Structure formats: C-alpha cells, structure tokens
Length: 225
Ligand code: SF4
Image (cartoon, rainbow, N blue to C red; front, side, top):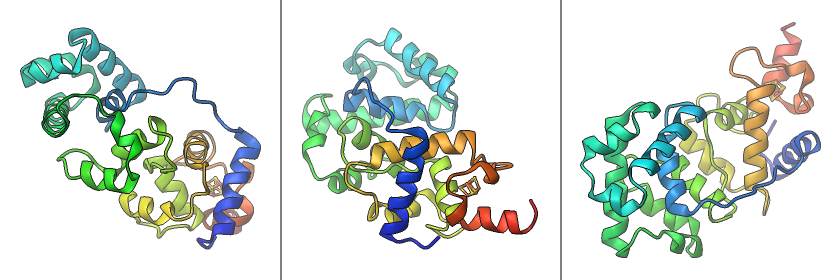
C-alpha cells in the first residue's frame, strides 16, 4: 500500500472498526512515565512493571533515586533485566532534568513543541525517539505516534515504509501522516493487532481487516501461504 494520507486514514479506520478506541483511564505523570519506559526497554511488560514497582518501593521519590548509588538502583530494578545499564540511564535522566529544571517535575514538557522535546531528550544517552514519544503521547496527549517493534513490523508489511526501515526512520516517516487526535488510538490498536493477528511469525493474513491493501498479506496469499 502506498504511503498516502488516504491509506493511513483507511488503516486507522479499519483497525478502529475492530478494536474501537481504547480508553486511557489514568494519565501517568511525565517523569514517572519516562522512567517506567526506560525500564520497559528490551523486556516484557510483566518484568518492567515489576521493576518499576520495586524501584518505587525502595525509593519513593525521584529525589531518593537521584541520591542513591547506581548499584542500589540497579539492585532495585534487577527483575527488569539490563539493570546496570538502565540504572545508569535513569540516573543520567534525573541528573539532566534536575540540572536543567531544578526539580524532577516534567509537566512543562507538555506545553512545549513535541518535536523540540524529542530533539532535546534524544540528546540524553539511552533515551531514544520511542521512549520520549511514549511520554509525549500518553502523558501529554500530544499527537505523537510511538513506533515500537510491532508498529515498525506492521508499517513495513503494509508497505508504508521500506522492509528494513529502522524504528526511528519509520517514526519520522509516519509522523507526517498521523491524523489529528489519532496517534494514541492508532498506536494501541496497531500493537494489539501485532500481538493477535499480525504476529512476527505466522501472521493471520486471511483474518486481517487490512488484507485488501496490505503488500505482505497479498503476496503471502498469492503464494499460497
Ligand atoms: S494482511 Fe497479514 S501482513 Fe498484512 S497487516 Fe494483516 S496480518 Fe499483517
């Protein structure tokens, strides 16, 4: 499927027709969300949630995490994997935010141009476009479309981006086409679709509402798969 506004709109609508518009019951504070998203890197949701809970139990405030030794932070987040690396990332982010803002309150980012925030925060080692775009999307309700592994795979299969497009490249390609107010819904629906139908292995193309326009699905059906 060619990358056109019409095709992206169609894809958004097709997925909404089966999955609806997922509700967001709580709005995480930007700083909480940023740290929790760092903890979610390269691990499962279950493990990252466990690590975040443990971190907050050991260190109830971000000031406490900031003051703690990196080894102590790593010990608290061990269940999330890559603990030493993530503890350093967390410490770096806290250091950056405190030095530049004088506190750990990140609410101000929601009032800024999201692309300036992406530019600023991806300058911190260990923070990528996906991490900060999740914060902007879910904590700030900005129309920013985070690209994780499911989103990237599906955008590639549909033909919106080249087969080997890196997530960052996919993010910037998709960004121009996300309809106003649809980034969060579309992101959640694509992820749901990736977990249930368009799985990494053996996608269920014959059951997919995107099949009629999907490059990969059409090839797969034509080849008898
Ligand atoms: S048709 Fe197949 S490859 Fe295309 S989006 Fe659907 S499940 Fe994925």
